[in-house]
Length: 394
Image (cartoon, one colour):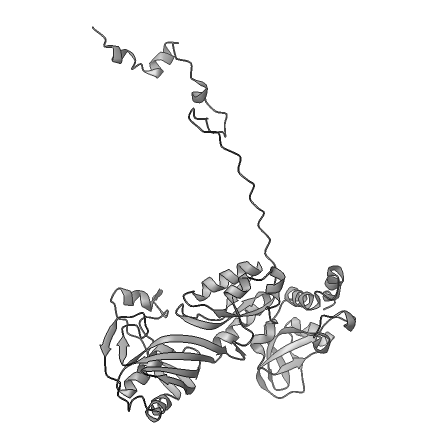
């Protein structure tokens, strides 16, 4: 049989090995030790990589930052950005603010997260900008225009506008819009809306405490709205438009208040990013800022220790649905305290309610959280080892 030259090179390596004539593998083909990758002949020698910088550890911070959320950012995205800037261990926000809305978003850290529900349940205040004469599929500027109607001079008169706003004061029923984050069978309503699916929604009772007209410029109406939690301002804008007879949709929304806090003292994300880490901490407010409109109760040191165990305490106070409860700071030299602290030497222990002369705990902080807040309050006025020792007295 005649063997062609190219066939002679097609030798089965296993057959050669079996016959004792296996070719010697090159250095690049030699088997590598266990756990190592065999080197390739064509591998290029690379420069050694620079070692990665060590990630800074997270910190146990306690308090609240009043963030002025920018347009286009979700509440959770804003929270995560601030959390990274502060290197905070534990954080949460106090209720979703739509990406198309700006304004007040209280962010809670450490012990303050236990009171985030307080802000979530609190009344809200908004500046709403409303476009008269057009209704959209979403109730805001993102949706397709469904209908355009003329806005007569009479409709734009202050008397007519005030009457339309006053028609919605007090308790009203609102049907949540399809383009909302409200869940149905585990999915947000806006997901169904994008698929063209309409879900039946039950009306919800909300309260409109007040609506003031801030300005009227052509067919654009700016309102100051004070309302209960869960109020859909886009739905309110649509309803006012229908009451006028011309239709309307929301083109701008800014939250200006939540419970007892407002935009006063709020900081923007850009401002925080431009600061050093220590400067950012100056915007961290006390954990009780969300409870500032509640009555307060001050306990003695022995009573404070018992309260922290969850025991009811006898008090000579009138019944109250919710109070904030404090204990004394450890005994330290007032001259060493940070500016402004000497007149308010107390630390938050939690929240409670009073019934029949008893102080009944509602939400308690842990001893570690209390100690952490004491440390933060005394920080800068005493050396770190002295601070820790003083905090241990509570």
